[in-house]
Image 1 (spheres, rainbow, N blue to C red):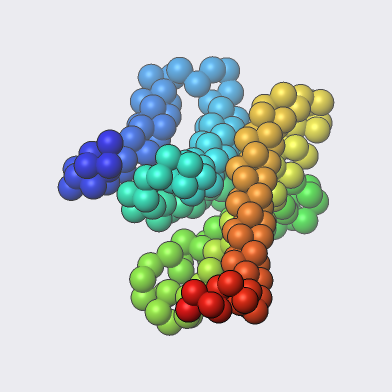
Image 2: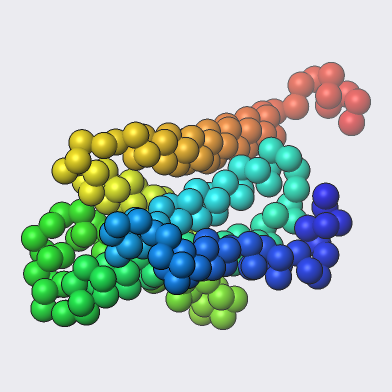
Length: 221
């Protein structure tokens, strides 16, 4: 498995796989297979794939650590950029099919409907993350500040779920919301547990190193 992940073709394969949802949506639009309201179907589908891609990105680190497969980390940047890509498609679908690219109407709609405002905030954060996802940005910002900025992906996850929740509140349909919320809660909960565990281990090792040597240990030395 590790050799496959390091193969030169691995990244192109993942890239193509990430484009398959878009390919299906283009085909379904051309073949008139999006149902009675294709505009709504496109808006919902691009939003769904944004959340799915976000879950996939946040799953990279837990899977990498649990399976001891560090090679997975090389796909994280690409997957993160696809989260941004599908989020932009989601916004464009809303702006085009729902609002006709009428900017004043879009701005009024954002101010009027909280779930659109929350989604816009999530996209703004994703834009910052995408713009600073490259090595030059890491060097320019410094590793600590870059890491602090990219931890806002957790805020993106929360805003995404809130956006989805408020959107479904009108129809009182929260089944899918609960599924995504549970997946993201599990992924973020694992991160918190792993971080606390590392801190405890580090504190234990630091305490052990600072203890004075016992008489028996001094005699051996």
